[in-house]
Structure formats: C-alpha cells, structure tokens
Amino acid sequence: EAAITDVSQLAEGQMTVAATPGISVYYLPDWMQAFRAAYPNLTVHSRTDITPKIVDALRAGKIDVGLVEGELDNGPAAVGIGVVELENVEQLVVVGPSHPWWGRESLVCADLNGQTFVMRPRNSQTRLWLDSRFQAAGTVIQIAAEFDNVETIKRAVANGMGISILPGYAIAAEVEAGSLAAIPVTDKPLQRTLKLLWNEENRLTPVCRAFVRHLAGYFPHLKETGIPFLAAAVDR
Image (cartoon, rainbow, N blue to C red; front, top):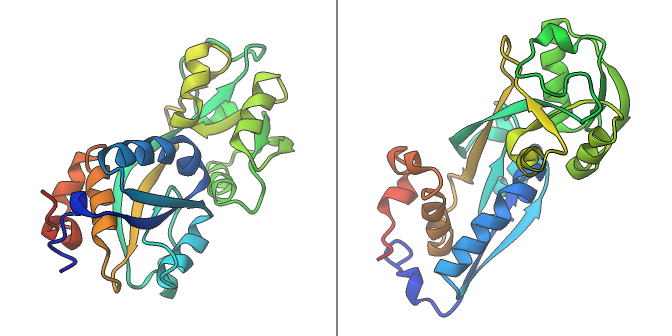
C-alpha cells in the first residue's frame, strides 16, 4: 500500500528531515517551499543538528531522512544507514573589502599560513574537518574569533576582523552584492560532499519518497543511483 500511494491525493501527510547547519539555512527553505507548492497538503518538518546526531536520530526512527555536509564515521553507528552523494561543495576563502587579498582571483594553501581567521567553534564538524586539512598541509593560522553562526562569521569578515573559509552557497548573496569576495584555493582544493542519508531498515513513507523525488529535480543523478525506494515509488 505504501509503495503505490498517490501522494497528490492525500488529504494530509508529513515527514521530518534533519540537516546540518549550512544546508538547513541556505538550501532547505527553498526546497521545502517548492515541495509545498507542488503538494500543498503535505508538511515537511525540519530540524538542524550535527552529523553524528542526525545519524543517531535516523537509527532511532525520529527523522525520515538526513541531509549532511559532514564526514561520516564508518564505525558501528553507520551500519544500516544508506548514503548517496548529492554534490561536491567547494569551500572558499572569504575576505572583506579592506583585506589585501580583495581582488585576488586565486590562492594556494601556503598563502594561508600565518593569516588571521574567524572560525566555527573547535568542536564543530566543519572546524574539525578544516583543522585536519590545515594540519595535513602544514598550515598554521591565527584565530581572531570563533562563532557558531555563519551569518556572524560573514559579518565579522566583512568588518575586517579576519578571513574565513565558507561554502560557496553561503556567501553567494554577499559576493554578488560586493560586500565579500570569495577566492578558491587552487593547489589543494577544499571540498566537502553534500549527502542524503536514510535508515535502510525502515520503510519510508510515501510523503518521504515524494520529497526525495522532489530533490531529484535539483540533483538529477539521484534517479540513476539505484536507491530502491526512489526507483520503486509510484507518484503519478
């Protein structure tokens, strides 16, 4: 019955998706709004969390799917968690108008040595990932401030407190407006991967499958990944 339900005929329905902070702020609202326009009787609840807690919530059946930009632990906690990659997200060096690098088209990793940074907190997944990349490259930086909010980081950088490294989608509006500049690191590209997660042991609801098919409009290769619940679902 779940496999053949036509969600467009449902009087109501709901699902819950959890996303890591960047996705939750800069991607998910647009996706949810477009989904709601296509299915006005369906509701998507969202929550923001870090990658390990999203995996835990999937295993506990508290959410339907997860969207993460973090690295996954391949240990016991990941057993039974389905994963498909959606896109690679480039992380860019971000500077304000007063910085000497304003107008630079590219950097190399060695340029970052000794620079003053505005960063995410030390225990955040993003910071742990970035620290590991710096360590591998032998790059030593100075920390001017740590903030747990990307918008605060962007404001601090724009005001000249330091530079930062942020995903391209988070700074697109500011770059277009001319309040920030984004510079790629060419010799050691900084990339993370946006991923869709689900619990392979749970049967996903028709509403959840409809939402994943909606995401395939943004990431067409989803249709080719062989996800069982995506290929088998019927929604005409």
